[in-house]
Amino acid sequence: MLTQNPALGACPSLRHEYQFQVGDRVETYNHCKGTVIRVDIDESGVFIVVRFETQYGEFAYDPYDLKVIQ
Image 1 (cartoon, rainbow, N blue to C red):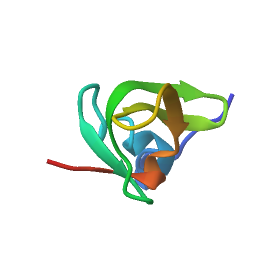
Image 2 (cartoon, rainbow, N blue to C red):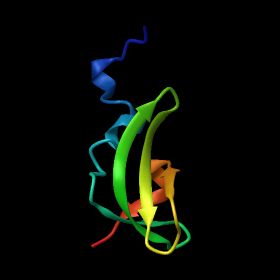
Image 3 (cartoon, helix red, strand yellow):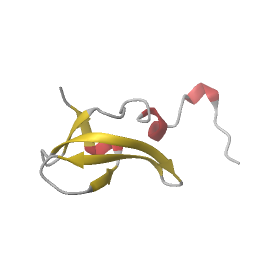
Image 4 (cartoon, helix red, strand yellow):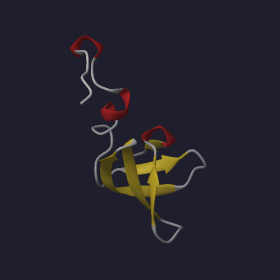
């Protein structure tokens, strides 16, 4: 099991878990707009599942590839 030094703070990938919430409006790096429908963690880290307005289906993104919009 991995241990973490408390002096270093939380893992950078986990801090995004709280930045995005279900229902947030987001925009990708190529200006596609959509809505967060799920925030999940797997063995690779945190990923955000987004449903876009102009595309059919759901897509998973790295938190660094998205920004919250108003």
